[in-house]
Image (cartoon, rainbow, N blue to C red; front, side):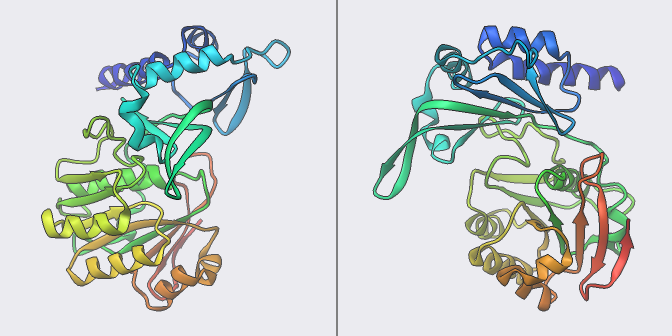
Length: 318
């Protein structure tokens, strides 16, 4: 099993290297030998290579002698990312990112082309941010006893500041709910993956482990996707990341009324801040969710600061 995990990690590392210009690839390979702790690789024309590892930024190879990115290197990188056909990825580029094999997300910035007040494409790309996809199998283990009843999942909302592992946590929750374990009976899970972060789909196939009973709508708006899943796939649980609009709330209400359990997340520092948000605060006052999980910026992804019931009473605190 360990050997298999090692091979998989090596494969994902090579996937990252394979989308970089050869000269950049050489620098990265000399400075890093694995994906362990690697979160981002940022490339900007005329600027040094920067990586974020274990929440710390570093210039490569050194601040004294950095490797400065050229237009040609960025163009070569985009050629590898798009398989030499940016046109084929026009729909994804409208959202400002591409998802590549392995579930890694590549954000881009440059000249935005507009059409009828909507983003049509991004040209003259000058910045690339490669966000490394990480799975932490088992990171939801300690949470499951608090968000399950009688082998069923509770309506659960995860409240988290940015970069605290909420997506990683939801991903593992989906896997465990789908496959089942001693806390929850395995059941069908519908995932609306608007930004391709949960499943990390590449050519329609999830690159992350989301369980054997999971169906994914990739690159689909959350509100529309939840209703589509209910009508087409009859999920027992629906999972979405980063809700916030009134449309999202209406779709969540509809899903709950249809008997689906909800796993969702929202940006926020704590329960007090969440209650002050217009849309989210109304959900809390109406006790739409049975459990609230607040994350903090700890050493490991998905570290829990507190778990609360539908009344806001503390069930568990760090």
